[in-house]
Amino acid sequence: MRLHSTFAAALVLTLTTLAHAGERPNVLFIAVDDLRPELGAYGIKEIKSPNIDQLAKSGMVFDKAFVQQAVCSPSRTSLMTGARPDTTKVWDLVTHFRTAMPEVVTLGQHFKQNGYFVQGMGKIYHGGFDDAPTWSVPWQTPKAPKYASDMANAGQASDAEEDPDGDASKTKGGAKAKSKVRGPVLEGADVPDDTFTDGKVADLAIQTLGQLGAKKEPFFLAVGLVRPHLPFVAPKKYWDMYDPAKIAMAPNRYPPKDAPDYAIRNLVTGGELRMYQDIPEGHLPDDLARRLKHGYYASVSYTDAQVGRVLAELDRLGLRKNTIVVLWGDHGWKLGEHDGWAKHGNTENDTNAPLIVSVPGMKTANTHSKALVEFVDIYPTLSELAGLPLPKHLEGSSFKPVLDDPSRAWKQAVFSQYPRPKAGKDKADLMGYAMRTDRYRFTVWVHTADAKQIDAIELYDHQSDPQENVNLAKQPEQAELVRKLMAQWSAGWRGALPKL
Image (cartoon, rainbow, N blue to C red; front, side, top):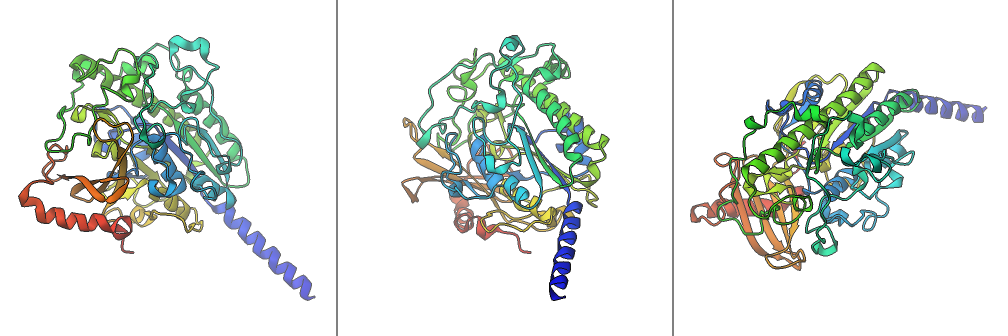
């Protein structure tokens, strides 16, 4: 009799658990490469992004979301592991996080271990990398040509599998990568959307949603889109959305005054943009800079269309009512600001990235929050929203309370970092640790061999200088402010956690 009672109790517990699992929300996790927080939803009406804007109306837009390191692999690694670069030991584009953290449970893996079916496609981890334990089935991405003019090679590697970020941090220790010309930097051929990787990834996501919606367990679907990453290749109809004569140049095409020389490297003379054809050395002429911005805008609109197709299928299948949708860009991107192009730094342009979260039934839909949040916070936030326990290794904070109240007090500061070689050196012997408060950006450059040895400090006041054009750190009248910010910086991310 006692055995029967024990079995009955266990059965009730199992059925209750399964019922609870059936009520758990799905997650649609959309990653966009190199996307600036400049969309219609962010108040930039020049950008044609109607689908992402519509998503924003059903969710919350985070105006002050910051990545942990402004380059693909370190940023994506921090998001997917919930740990910061100094913990993952991923500061470059050639190190896999399992080297330093072989047993870490990734975001997808955590959902999988808690009863979710987890599937990924397109660029989620950095090109050329994957992590099999993250997924319930192998990660995949369709093959597609990089250029319409190269359609005969459609069976070769797709954009999502390549490593096109070209930076001095590419190789171990920060040694410079060898220059490699990759092809034209721009293309606007009159071809269908599914000519390229992102169109095919959207097709695959649409097909997969139908399969996932038929499963008993909740799903976590990760969809990675590579545009607007270089090269700026998008079908002609997206180029036609913009009048190049109306595209304005960056207002500050010069380095910040009194900043160290290495703070903003001119990425035109080397690095990512320089890997493509027909890029002259030095300052870009206005006509080329305008064409590049045109290509970037067209690529954003192309990606927006793919996001719209996936969201439309989510609606058509009736899955939106029980699906959390999160859209994020893996870092910012300079479009001529400080005479720089691409990411690879600690500026606001580099580290501020778009983040939109839509939760079924949220009472704060169609709102913005100016709360300081970090991409390392996304792992605990999605876990809490799904009712999952939080692993102990996490170095971020769930911002679920902000989703309930976008105006509430939150983190005092957020943190990013970037390695940099001093002038004339190939190896990254400096690490810049940036702290962003509501008002200030404060960056301390320390020697990697001795973190107590400070090489330079940057201080920008976003109240008077939102473009970060003048470094105030050396001004005598700012000495007390520098001292206070240094104390806050020294306390690190743990000292800036929200008071719950």
